Length: 223
Image: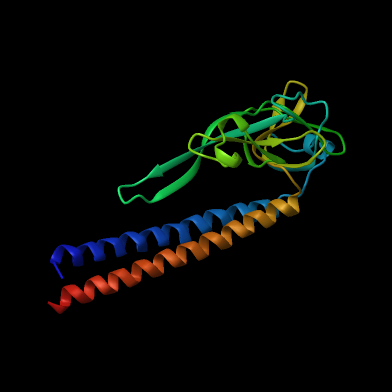
């Protein structure tokens, strides 16, 4: 076996091993930190939020108020993604959805009173519905390169908002970092699943990397 093939095996092994460590350790640790934060935050009502000091971490569980303005179709807020399809030199096809835009206005939430999400820079961890733009779909309404989909929030549906307490024009507001279309229990479950997936995925990558490193090292020492 040529030396360059042996070195390639070793290099690939180190790359996989590094990726596995980053995914399994760093990624899972970050996800676990988010789970711990969510577990530590008790849902606040509108009155309880008003009693919190400015800058305090806060979680509000309620419903999206019907008084919010619809911004697109039946969504009061949404993030849009576009499908990016690439084909490498070997003809292998890969697909990934990338962020393509958003409309995240100030929102009113109902949590035993009215809570105002006062900022317009929050992310939507999960929408209540996903809508695919028919005009961008391919044959049999299948997503193709350039297809667009929208993750949207709907009025009257449960929502969890996580952020910090800020002073608004008419009292305390929530500067949200993340909105999740569902209950706190569902949000926690999704984050725990993400943590477990990252650990398993990282372990697989690290295992493949270790195997390639072992094979590559064995061939190099064998000459």
